[in-house]
Length: 475
Image (cartoon, rainbow, N blue to C red; front, side, top):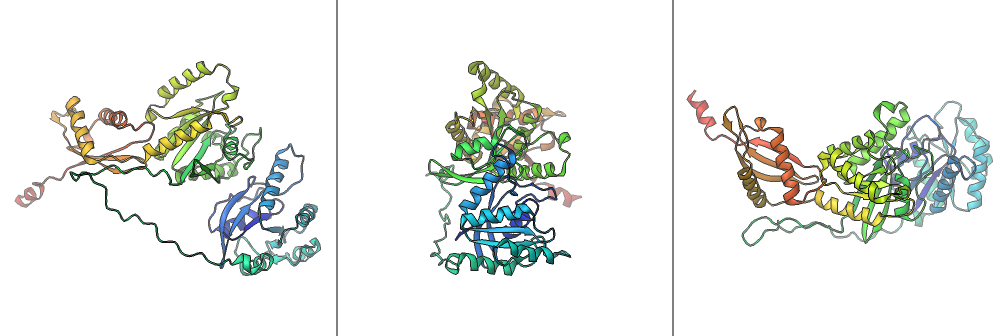
């Protein structure tokens, strides 16, 4: 992107609505309640022919540094310092407040380009607020309606005038050659499929989920080495799912911080429902999901439900027992956690679990290694020949049961997909195959092909009867 823009203003002036309008998607949560946004959220914006990076920020309210509002103020100041240009939103419908004048003074001291934007200008009676905005001393305000998309062309012209045409429209780089793998499917000398190698350079999407106040944002800040996300002792600080990028041993990692997920019965407020829905979208978008447990009170019912949700969505899961610095008897607690993991999560047998401390940084390298190894397992493909040899040995050791006096027969097996691994078995009467025998096959796959901790999908279908059409003709 050619330049970076920060959207600033007091609470409830429409910053997140404008952010969603510019990125073209409803990424930021929007509600009538003031102060919905707390963290700074980046995005890739498009405005007519302009392309730039944009940052949504919290509504600025001056407070003591040790309060939640004070920490939100610090996050917004960091976004202003990072940006090349600030869009200062005021409410043309509601008029100016002393907070707007304080923000205008702060932006003037920064000495960076500022575009004054009078939002909600479509409302009746907004002319007074529009003309009052001249008194802020930041030039002529640009009237827009972020909700209805009015005034976007004028906003584009104001941004170009403030940032300069050379910065707004940098020379285009040469178009790189398309990166398409045209190699044929790898096969060995006998013509059998060869399992594809894992791509160690591919960017990896990781979502961090868990109950409120488990330490998710603190963990990501420790990975980044800076206070990028808002943290504190209060539960439920994070509302939006915020994505951050960083490199780990030369590989790009895109992490999503999500809102704490409480039990469904306790989620009553509309805003919290929106936050949980945003966290669920982050889980579906991610490849690997780290479920953060509080090591001092692990395996609450909600923890188990979150793990089950992640596995049902088909994501690769890793457990992180956070706040390990608060545990006294490490050996005893670790043995207890291992026993409970095996007993309470039978559907994720072999799931990787790592004790960590987001506060001190203990165990973070082991956690990242567990994430990479789990992603490798999640992406694994097994050749059809190996699967059929394995299926034959399994049925010899433990034949399928007879149902209604007729023996079931498993004929053929292949892997139909990865991410997560999915397998199809052709058999007689698939509906009659007992669930216990399906579990026997899945557990055998985990053990014999080293597929610990990832969901395995097993599908059964009946083979075509070559004599069925002839029988119909005789009738």
